[in-house]
Length: 548
Image (cartoon, rainbow, N blue to C red; front, side):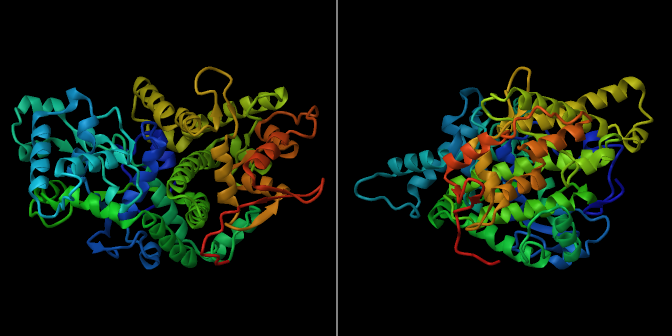
């Protein structure tokens, strides 16, 4: 636990005190949705960035390799998110709760609409008047809402289909505004908080830092680890310099897949009519210097998970997919990386489970996956036990002696309170919550929780472990999902899950524990049967870039 990236001073007496943050980094948090993990990840990527006083490449989505490998001590990564309040107001106010529409918000909305009607930038055709055009635009951008339908309009987020729709978090401090008797929009801007991080809660930042931590590693170090872990990487995927360039290009292509008109319309609605809002929310008092937020840190050991995350992101970005489906799969990628990071770090620091890592996957843990229908009773019981063991491992890890030592100044009551919050919002219950959100654990409510795969998760596993346009043997595919994510689906790997969990290998498995998986792969159209003894799993979505 000694190293972190960036190499900043951690505040164990303040924001880094929570045991979950001490172990996993600042921070994974239960209140952040899967969609918001990706939104925040892309927010950091698309925002202007700097390290200390040194600005990074203006249009760069990732810090350059020289900076990554020579990061100055004590300096966090800083980025300047845009609030895009005018765009959110135009798109979401009309569908928000009536009690959340402050008078100043409604008046500014009316002023914006009035200015747009009169603007020479809005061309009215002979078949539609200005009001019809504006209503059509409002419905269009409302359709891009990703999360936050039940929140105040400013706390909602767009689907990150273009950079102009990616915005930072804004929270309306209603009670304080009412107490102060706010009566104008300019005055109301003082009562929007852009730094509370309640929904964009740093999880996306942490994923971004894990990726950066991986890209700064020595190529031979990554290739040696991947070989030992039985993970297949191409020459480009195993070289951080080549991977960095490929990721930069691929992410840029993803953000440019939507027609540019959408981005231009979003920019027009946000700043094309009125710019004072942007100046007062996104800039310092001089109205010129952007306001920068500071990223947190990730554990130094996370480069292994970060390396695979980078490879998986690249493969998804380069696959020939519908833009919206790609974003949905990237959301799954962020959630799976979060779960993998939590389990891998817990396996390293759990006093019991790190002793049996040789019986586990390359990351030191195993998730025993049962058939979705639950018809295999024995495997279902193994999977339920696997969920319990994973939860126990995470709970054990955040009680590592080093963490307990940092909390030694607290009395027993305070320490119990801190650990209760850590377990619920940062630890094993966070793992379970996120796994249920993506369908990796069922049922969502009630007892008997077990690991399963649904169609979307299976599609993600195929597209992230197999390069676009390539195919692998079915047995190899099972090895790859085990190496990448610790997923055990057949008799052999389920036996390993038993040994890792501390129970004897069950001899009553029928030999076809993974029959459900072949059925799902067949139904998805990604399995090729060459003979009774040999089948292939393919990623059919070959993109234009086929660089080996």
